[in-house]
Image 1: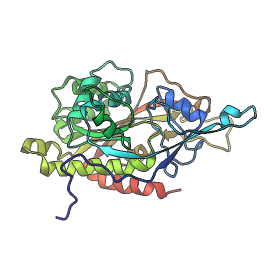
Image 2: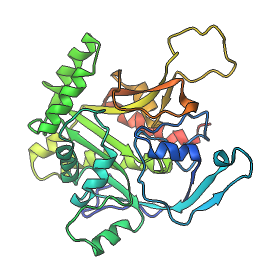
Image 3: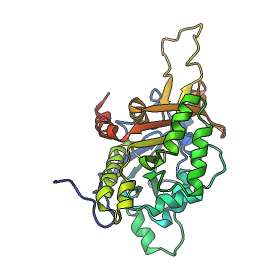
Image 4: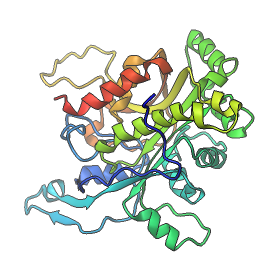
Length: 342
């Protein structure tokens, strides 16, 4: 039907022009905190800049070729900026990506003890649907130096979709489902969640999308395009009918984080001319998912939160969203147009 087909071997986007990444002191604070978040009001719109705010810690390896600019004033540290040029490539998941993916997902279920290693294994074993983003040339270096071990250097992002029915017997999925039910405080919503997670589980895909703070926003639309294209291809290309049917999804569940204004439900005695946003979407695409969601709920997080002074009026919250698969085309359209919006 003229539809673009998935390459037989690992796929790689054509190398994009190098992207200039900038890191301020506050950004570096976010990079090395357990919970990262940047309000749109504090930095240029990430949709038009080279970096995107996310809710994970950054790869701690120091960047190369850094240009540092410092002022001589008392605000010297506040003025400091680090610049690094980088380009990226997409790859199929591999077992040696284990440590890097586990690092990205270390706070996926807040501070709940669970089988995270088993969860990472599921993601890496599903090579036909899922993408790893690495620094350009990193994969070749790993292959030349491959000693059978794991490597987490140069890994910037992971995206995948796991059928909750297909993997229902795995301990990590059982624990994940239990967590999602436990954190839902509204009984009506909890009943709907139980239905999705149990009776309708074979129709539900868990959308896993995590990236480091220095992964540029320009990569986000192609990442989601790659994922949803692969899901479509898998319904035709998987070797068995059972596997093909496992990708005929009707719903996607996305588990993410937002910043919520502590005073969002309070009337302040003093009205500020510069009103704060009630919600900051740490990953910009989550706002689109939220708009399209069939149901959603927020929940409190118990892991330690390292919030900067600039964000003192915000608290980090968990956000779960359920989106119909039929609405994914609208999501992709909105995501493509997002960088052009002011």
